[in-house]
Length: 145
Ligand code: HEM
Image 1 (tube, rainbow, N blue to C red):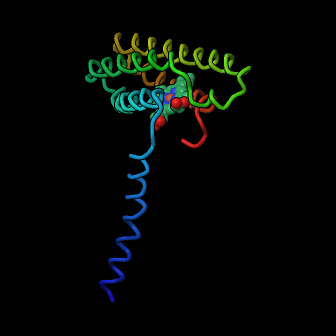
Image 2: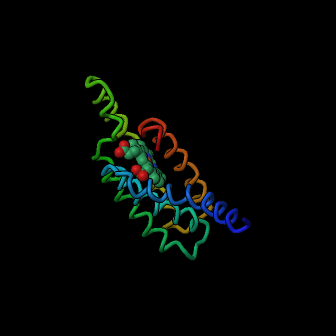
Image 3: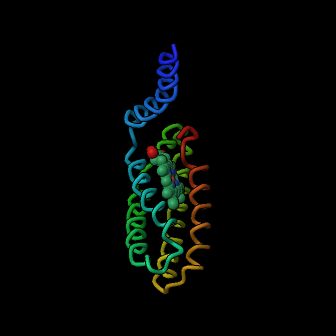
């Protein structure tokens, strides 16, 4: 009986994790979603390393990747645009591109700070860019992902 309870308990714990992994594999990413995932990987590492001047060389490389994915993303169409009436799509896309250009500008400033070895300012700007990301997602990304 003890054993049964243990097995049942183990299953209870493992099942949601297995389902989540399966769900992630199943989920089809849009081309923009792929770019965003790549951006996210670089961003997370950059956030970990940003305070450390000894890591600036690597941080600049990560920043390069971010800028490239941001450029690629600017030319793509968010999946939300498909849900909008045709008349509203151009304005939506224009606002999206402007927000991406803003991100690009901030990344370029971050590059200047890192190049100059100013990790204090770089840290401050990272927070601002995170807010930019939140704003972009609120406006242009579907609510459920
Ligand atoms: C540091 C900056 C950013 C990071 C790290 C980031 C990261 C991500 C991630 C992880 C996803 C989910 C991808 C998936 O699994 O499908 C995503 C989706 C998305 N992001 Fe970002 N993002 C950033 C900035 C922005 C900005 C500034 C905008 C808008 C101007 C934006 C617009 C979107 C949109 C529209 C999607 C949904 C994908 C689609 O419509 O096909 N993101 N982002």
